[in-house]
Every structure is written in structure tokens, then in C-alpha cells.
Image (cartoon, helix red, strand yellow):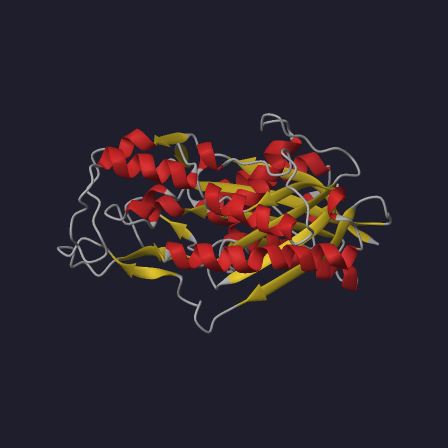
Length: 353
């Protein structure tokens, strides 16, 4: 029995926010002092490090659960299943539904319940719940679906990652340029096959020193006395943590399968930062004393930015559908999903397509 992805879908918001749109922003240091550099220089350095040229924002009348519904509907349609047959809807996010011009998260009811409602699913046996696992949330949802299927308590699961980070960013923080919105989903089914499906997985959470590398914090604008908090991150700490631990988690998962590194055709890694992702992949292949294949790591961050839990499922869906230039996957290809994020948490899944 294998857990097989039978359908995928994504929702890429229509609003394009280019780097040039930040030229008139007022970026400040954490202590509220102004940068000594002009915005054009700040943006140029930002693009060189992250690879981000533009990102997508949700329309004012779209919430995270709306994006999740659109991605889910596409995944269900591609799988060909009757949605009433779903045993679980697992939705990963970090901030719930955040209305435009509001910083308050709305998670009552859960976003998974909202998606079930939008899909019109009547079956009470379809259990809908959210998970909070930072950026690796969608992959963790896949791992949970695999557990349900392996245990025999589920046959069909819908796993979603959706986020509208544009509504929880501090406009005075240059890191705000990293974040974006989007949603990705997949249907995972139990199948009597050895030809495809989830082969293995690995995960970890570190909280001794790492717990608050990503956190909620006050605006860098010291004149702001509203008490509103925004997403904040310790970029250098996250980079060092990811570089040290993500390759090891990927190796743990791959070694469980008994496959050789040469059999891995694609690595779908969380689109956090181009330089960090490149360094992680190099470190991963170095563990096997081999060079990185030129076509192993598709990237979407250049145009879509970092949409947290949505980056991996949207990237996978785009490559499947030929939307990433010079990248494709074929039946029988072994791929790895991997991510790192708030917690701090890391996970990886080895999958045979």
C-alpha cells in the first residue's frame, strides 16, 4: 500500500508587486534608525541575495481560505475523486484569514472547515483541521496524511498550504520584501502499487535556542504606538540553521529508501531565499560526495516570492504542468520535498512520481 498524489492544484494571486514598487518605502533598522543606503541599493542587494524580482499579493476581497479553496478545487478535479469521499482535509497556514487593513488573525472556524464548506462537502466523516508548523506545514500535512493512510483509517486526504503574508508584514522592515501570498493543494490516496507514492520522510523541531528565530514583533517604526505586531525573522540565524540541518533531514529520508542520490531527479525545496536554497542543495550533495545536477532544483521565488506553506505545493504543481522553464517530471522519477521554517522545524519527504 502506498500513498499516492493523484491531483494537484495551485492558486497564484493576480496582483504583482515588483521590487521597484518599494523604491519609495521608508526602511528602518530594528532600533528605528534610518538606513544609510538609498532604497535602490537596498533593493539591488536584496534581489542578489534572495533572487526575488517580484511577488504576488492576494486581492483585497480574497482571504487565505479563498486561495486554499481555489487550489483545492483544482486538485480534486485533477484527481477525479468525489469530494464526499475525502476522509481528511488538512490545511497548513500560520496566520489564518487576515482581512485587508487588519492585522488580526481569524481562525474561528478553522480554515480547513471553511474550505470544506466552500467545497460543499456534506459528509461528517470528512474531518477538517488546521496545522501550524511554520513554512514546512504543507509537507507535514503530507506526512500526516501518509500516517492516516498507512494506519488504514483513511483512503483519501486533501492537503493544503495557504498563506497571505502580505497582510502581516511591517512596511518599515526591508524583510517585508521577501513575503508573498499563494496556495497549493494535493489529493493523496491509498493505492495498491509499488510503482509510485511516498517512500519515506523525516522531520525535526529545535526549540532550545532556535524557537524565536521567526516571531511576532513590533514595527521598526518607533512612532508606531498601536501595539500591532508583525512577522519578524533573524535572517542570519535561519540561514545557518537551515544550512546545517536541512541537508541532514533530506539525507535521513533518502537513506531510509535505500536509493542512490543519482536517482533523485528533482528537489522541491521551500522557496525562502535563493542563495540559502542553493547552499542547502550543495551541502546535501556534498554529503554524498557528488556534484549537484544542473537541473535538479526548480525555483519559483524569482517571480512568486516566499509564500511560506504554499511554496512547495505550488512549485510542484507548476513543474507538473510545464510552467517552470527547463523543468519537468516524468513517471517513475524520484523527487524530494523539503522545507524549513518557524518552530524551528524541518522536514523532508521522498516521493516516487
